[in-house]
Amino acid sequence: MFRRSEVEAISSVQNAFERSYITPPEYFMRFYYTYTLESEKFRDLYKGCTNDLLRRIKEHNNGLVEATRLKRPWKLI
Image 1 (cartoon, rainbow, N blue to C red):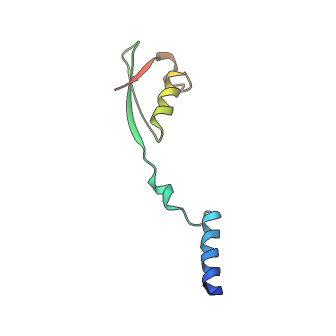
Image 2 (cartoon, rainbow, N blue to C red):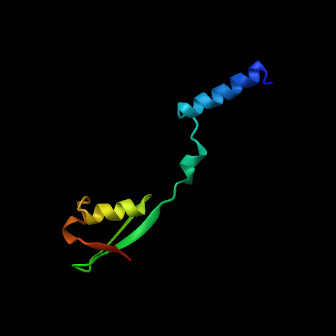
Image 3 (cartoon, rainbow, N blue to C red):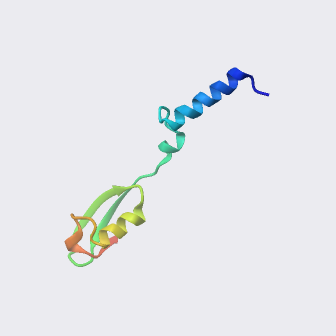
């Protein structure tokens, strides 16, 4: 059985996480990737970084990235 002071302490820690005063450990566990793309049409190279590599390559090949829109399609090298 928890004492009242222990329950209040646990509750205050939970509230702090919810209000983002304390950053949860998962925030620091994100992985980022650096990548190089080659234009299959022009043989130009583009380098970038992202935390979701598959999404980012799709964005490049669907013309959603202004810097690479005109030189599609791209392949990861």
